[in-house]
Amino acid sequence: MIKNIRLRVLPQVWADAQKLEQEIARQNAISPKSIKGIRTLHRSIDARQRQVMIQLDIDVYINEMPPQQLFEPKQYREVKGDRQAIVVGLGPGGLFAALKLIELGIKPIVIERGRNVTDRRRDVALITRTQQVDPESNFCFGEGGAGAFSDGKLFTRSKKRGNVQGVLERLCQFGADTGILNAAHPHIGTDRLPGVIAAIRDEILRCGGEIHYETVVNELIVRGSSVITSDATEVIGVRTNRGQEFLGPVILATGHSARDVYHMLDRQRIPIETKGIAIGVRLEHPQQLIDQIQYHSRDGRGKYLPAAEYSFVTQADGRGVYSFCMCPGGVVVPSATGPEQVVVNGMSASSRGSRWANSAMVVEIRPDDIPVLLHDLGIKGMDASPLAVMAIQEEIERQAWLNGGRTQVAPAQRMTDFVHSRLSDSLSPSSYTPGLVSSPLHFWMPRFISSRLRAGLETFGRNAHGFMTDQATLIAAETRTSSPVRIPRDREQFVHPAVTGLYPCGEGAGFAGGIVSAAMDGERCAEALAGCYRQ
Image (cartoon, rainbow, N blue to C red):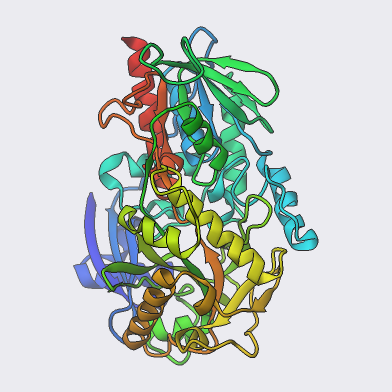
């Protein structure tokens, strides 16, 4: 007999399997000896009251043994070359698109501008030592995409867009901890995610797929012309920087930072659109302080609770101000992809064991706001361009570089000093290894952003006692929250409405916002492409 039970227990009870069984038996009038196994379906922390509780949705196996497998692994078969498709980008969208193509009997040919995930580790480590960024292999570019080194957070609200559980099960099949299957906010950890990515890649290769590293797509091959015209409405392949041509329908899964791809599409007259985005800073606190605030205790999280998270959102002068990509027990990392840029992001290892907590704190920017920001930043001639938001990103990143020391040293300011518009005499210790320099962010950041960010931080400080502190540091600039461009596509067929054979995919196309949603989008694009093959 299997009995589904929902219950709330103390953290110390959850941490001890024997105590948990005893509590289940006590609350449900079950003999402890009859419990043969427990399977947790969902687990979350309720910290709304002073006494923190663990909320559980579990299946209890009474007088019968639980199944040995938590899920059924998929079997992938070798594919031949009679049907093939091009996948541009080997981030979550590209990886899961390639797996789904194999499942559907289509050979994926993957084009990845960066290096494999093992070599990427060395390249990102060099950024701190040399203050130089390899434009093709960094925290954004390379196997695994930007998600490979950003905590491996798997939480998504896109549950209607695909099979979330299926994506989590595939990650477990390739090496992720099965704890992600029941956690409210699952994450793999940047120390473990590269191994999962490498296992997926090996399966793609084993099944006959191709992966071409350090290869950049310079041009889409359009039937009849190099640009879209009334007589040329089909993409039939790609040309690369190595002089190669690969033929087949194209899934474009290049991520949110492949700016040369947006220029290529604009040059080839493939319609693209401006898209709203959010820009701000990375805010870093001592993790112990966040634990004390969120768990309502001077002792912090204690022995049984994980590093605390937070999520804040408010409105300031008609625009949203919110936290994003919160990394408890994490570090701030340099995420530039080229020269004269300072960009920051956050990541955590699986243990979430560092002494810092960090989160993006960003301001919503809508397409209607573009003229104001272009004017404030002194950008001319871009008002009607679909690349206008990208130009705003680039200029703010350049300003961060100019104000940070013209290396990967980042401009920073104490939280209280930013709110009171004064330069910080000193800065708190930080996890950001390239280094920080005191800078008046309130002065050089666009007023559209800085004024709303200040108002948002003041609201968060009032709502969470202790959050507003001079121990917290604002580090600039957080600009890569999402794609600055949307590549349109048909809502049902996932193909570009003006170009058959082109399937815009994932974060880079403006249709996803994280590892799981990008993976689901890759699967859906592969299914749509296979449907056209069948027709």
